[in-house]
Image 1: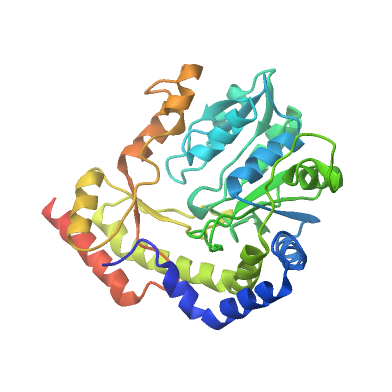
Image 2: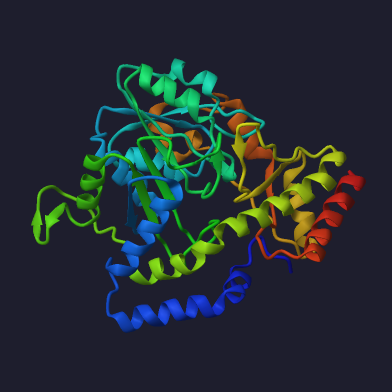
Length: 367
């Protein structure tokens, strides 16, 4: 069986480093925040080139806390892409605001920047670009539109750790960047973990308060916050993995290029990397007409694949109250019907990849 991602392979590749980090943390007696978390926060801040990095319990919490810090709530609107993981929309609703969807560029699956301004109303407070699949969103036009209309930009960088836009790291371009360290991410913990990053001192202070019950001083809540503190064990594991993140992304890129070399000639729509971006291939996404048949065929050959995502958020049950309907965002809906993720992770061997390529070729030949 070839897995979509093999987390144990990565663990075994740096087993001693991770084991040592875990044992050191257990012996330290610090399990919530503390020196391990501070060290990891400093590492990420330096890597991204930002002033502040604040460890949280998840990437979903990062989005919620970012919007809370910007005072986004009931009656407000937030512009997001029509094709993304539901949390991008769900967190907007969680703070009481309305998600306003913008269709995607069908080549990159990123928000189509030419459609943003028409979605802006007097209620719009922010834009959340998503660096989907590891390809950066087209940030300069987004930032220009935000400045023109006095909007905030929150980057959903859950899938893009290490990606670059015009040579600058994603998550460091907007007002706030939101990171996820879910285990399958390019830099993944051994459980849930997330982070917000910013250059704004006031926002950083507010987000630190929000992650810990609204405290500046322990036990003295100044507002209603959350219990969303990064565990020291997760921070220690992430810090052990962190020095390898760039080489792992390089391995993903090499595997992705090899997939494309073999699959593009079959007429399969393969990922692109636009001139201004550095793709880190959190997922390798192809688009085929008979997606479900291909997935079933791969499964019969012992090859895992996955659909990211089968339902655009505007067609989800929670979004029905906003009146969105099928046909509103055709590129997003087409992607949901025809995209498929193939196995891709840094430790995937050439022989395993060859097996996947051969299976896709066999399916394409028969069809």
